Every structure is written in structure tokens, then in C-alpha cells.
Picture (cartoon, helix red, strand yellow):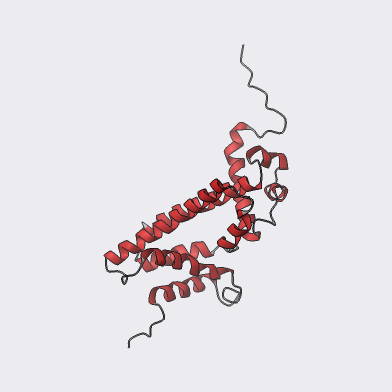
Length: 206
């Protein structure tokens, strides 16, 4: 006799679709959190945006704090791997920095620190630590890139960690409509930012 598969409990997602559904929820939640901030996003709103039931969201995530943490960790993990791939790829450092900036600035989002301040009251210390560690991994990657560029003589000596933080911070102008708009394309804004970051404010020698 052929053994029958066990019946699922009502409301539970299919086992073979678990990862796909969970990742879809996390990606959608990440977009909503990054666009609207922590307070304005609800699990019900995430469920509606995903086209799934609220029960499906609760099946994977116990509360908004857990969903926020896992969603932000997913975004930071993707950003880290994309940045690593570009930085380990071909081209000059300036060209690679521009490519990373274009990718980062393609997605409008609220200021990361503002979002974390808003969310911190509802997060555990362990959740905050996990997010900060993931954020620091990206800073560490860029710090290593700048340190190597200094050692190779590609850029002037400077604090490589400061350069990493400054580089990430300067890209937040993506959210400023007076800078990135119909007249000033995202690509041109990214190019201007990297040009300023690369050359600084010193007058050019003739």
C-alpha cells in the first residue's frame, strides 16, 4: 500500500513553498520598512502587499520586531554580497565605487539611523546587536578596500574606516528630491557624488 503524505494543519503554508514564501514576505517587508520606517508598517500591511494572509506572516514571524530584524538582515546581507562582488571585480577603484553607488542609490529609502532609532524601542538587545553586526560587516568590507587602495598608492593616506562611513553616508542624498529629480538623473547624481568623494574640494591644478 502506498503511504499517504501527512495532512497539513489548516492555514499552514505548504512545506515545499516555505522558503519562497518566507523570503517573499521578508523582501516585501524590507521594502516597506525602508520606504516608510518602522512605526508605519504593520504585519497586516505586509501580508496585503505580499498577497498572503496575515496568518501566513505570523506562521514565520512571531511579531513585527522579528520580521523587521530578519528583513533588515536580508537587505544588509544582499548589500554586502553585491558590494563584495563589485569590489572584487574589474575596474579602477573609482569605477567600482561608482557602480556600488548606482546600485545603492537605485532604491529610495529612509535614513538607516532614523529607522533604527524608531525601531529600537521595540527590539531586543540581541536583535539590535545582530543588525549592527551585519551593518559593521559592510563597513569592514569597505574599510579593507580603502586600506588596500592606500597601500597600493591608488588613493592618498587617510583613515580607511572614516572613508568607509563617509562613502556610505554621502549616498543618502538619494532621498533628496532637490538633488535627484527629473532634471538630475540618479546616474548623474551618483557620478557627481563619487567625483566629489574622489577629488574632494581642493582646487584643481592647471
